[in-house]
Image 1 (spheres, rainbow, N blue to C red):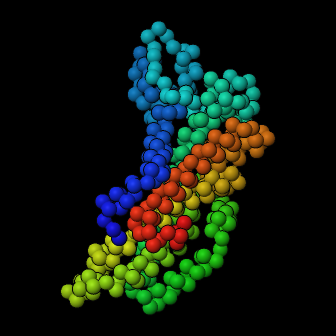
Image 2 (image 1 turned 180 degrees about the vertical axis):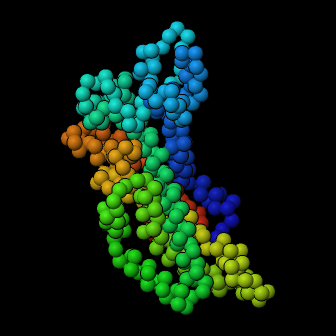
Image 3 (image 1 turned 90 degrees about the horizontal axis):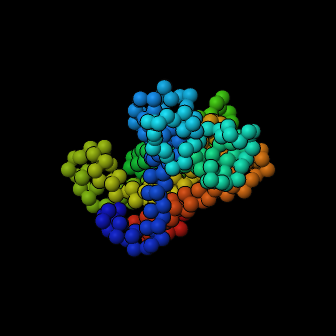
Length: 333
């Protein structure tokens, strides 16, 4: 695997790669600061003689019955607040609408509302956190599993390699999405953590195959032979010499994997077997649009967020692939 400075210099040569990376960074910032972009409570509040710092994050018990609209109506002469960009939470209904219906974008709701009066912008912003959480955690889990199984199979060979290869072949015989859909449907309930684990436990096979192939290649190198000759343990050889030089394709696969996990989460939530109904999710917004004959703002904006996210991670993955080893082109896409 090439040095990190060389990889970076190769990666940044293409403007498209940097645009993809900038989009990924922007998405991460949106996910981290979602409560400051859209929340039912202020960022800072001085109300009835009390001062509240970051009630939008902490949700203090004294403010559980309040929201930004009610606070502004109840403000006295000395009360004031610093509001988020959009003063609506992802699960907050706009009671001023007088009934549950999807409302097009206006000054009160920049991207409109869904069928029960929830702000679409707030749902998309907080849905970014859900999407990236699923992507990072699920991919982290299956990369870890794939590295361990692939490294053991490639380094030790024999029965370990045979058994792991047969398991991988069996797993790959099932279409991944429908396999995950079936598992989710059989489980008694749905949650974000459960979805992460299900994706992580069903998508490790590609990483295991990549790591196995790289380990088989690396173990023939002279420095591995020299380490064995000095009496180094297998664990030390794998950890110090084999894995660090086998992870290039894994980084590429992980970038593509985040995009895949985000798409799976959105698809499952759209079908009603992803995250639970109160969890803000792009797929949930799209699912809700079905009950109101698909108003354009409830499909266009979450669809656009999904499109840019998938495109950004795929662009970064392709850029990493070309920077790490151009010979990988076409093998990991």
